[in-house]
Length: 184
Image 1: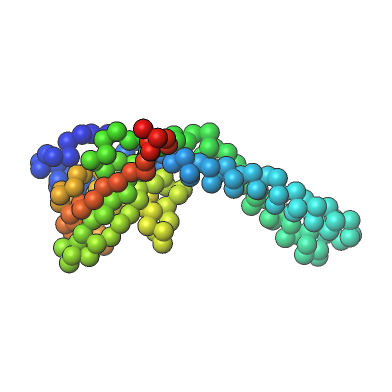
Image 2: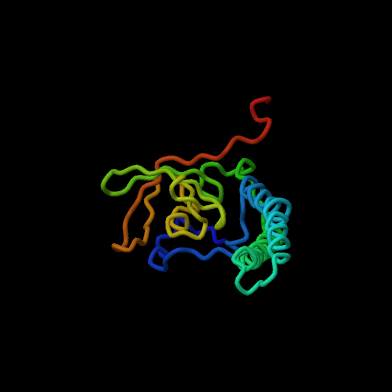
């Protein structure tokens, strides 16, 4: 990642690309991914296998809805298991609490910004698979995250929106506290 956020010459070039962006994940995101994988492998898949086995014993499989649906669901589960397994193997877990440069926007930051209409919004920058706009979590690959990355409080950054270029001002940046920080 380049560290030329303060250079005005690059502003017209657009958002910066981030290598391996889809591989970054927070510890909470990794835990959720592992929980989903475990639930699929140890709960849902065995339950569906049992239904398919029962349905297969009922005779004609070509008109057996339980059998046909069960086989389809097993393929979906197996596809998701392969996807999650690859994601876990290739993931780069980044703990936002370990961030030392807390005055700048990096992966895992929670950022409050204001639009030119003085509308304040707060977003947390998380991994691609963790993003949940309703919960205020935006993907590291999203236009808003890419615009904010590297910024500091008081910086005005350009955000490309469907309506065109928009200036937003960074008002606050925060990160989770490191584990055991209050014991110091």
